[in-house]
Image (cartoon, rainbow over all chains, first blue to last red; front, side, top):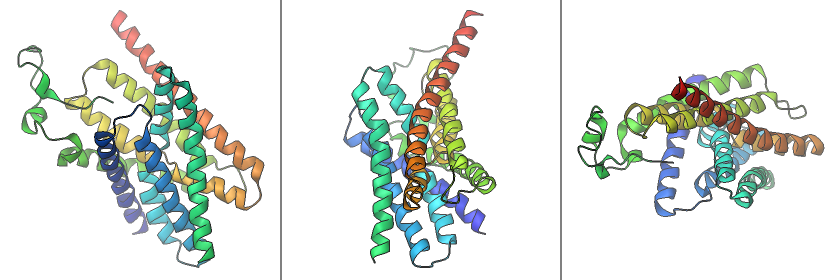
Length: 122
Length: 167
């Protein structure tokens, strides 16, 4: 049952990413891939909160599996972020490529750590 | 990324090509608001999530060692997405089967197969366990490796396309 829910949540996460990505791109047309950046940072924050709830508040790990591995895993994406970095390099936007690669990493880890810390203090 | 907008084409500009039934039926509606597009992404997402779930099950992360499961999944997914998007872009416009392949295999499968949130969580947990060197090394190796992987995929697809055109 957990497996079925996890797969459905992962697919729902992918659809949510598709919708958010398209809506962000429709409103703000920029060279820098803000849509994927924002998706990865918010998904990491959510996973940090979920992992914190399981780690610090003894909630069943099924929550983290379904919503974390499933939804957050399907919502956030590493392959698109990497691809967009290469496209920025190809367009000679080297500064933005570096910002995308390192900025996504630093911001996502910071968001995830904030989520963990937030739950820990509660 | 190119989105489908068949409405701008003059009706006879590609008379030799078959008319795409999807393009006619949903003319004017944004791609992400078409139920069929969402279904393709969903199906690819099920497949991508299940494969990642299986790999994470085989190579679980214990919070102190190198997270091989996520590392492998992310690099493999980046190669696949790079070659897929480059291959599709070189073979023609983003309409019809190419668009469905991009939604299913790219946005759905590769997107859900790879994950940034688990990467961020693993780095956080490595840091929490005071494995700072590995946390930084894992993050940098993922980002640099992912960029090289996506680039390799793009180069590979471009090369295959060139050979096909020449032969």
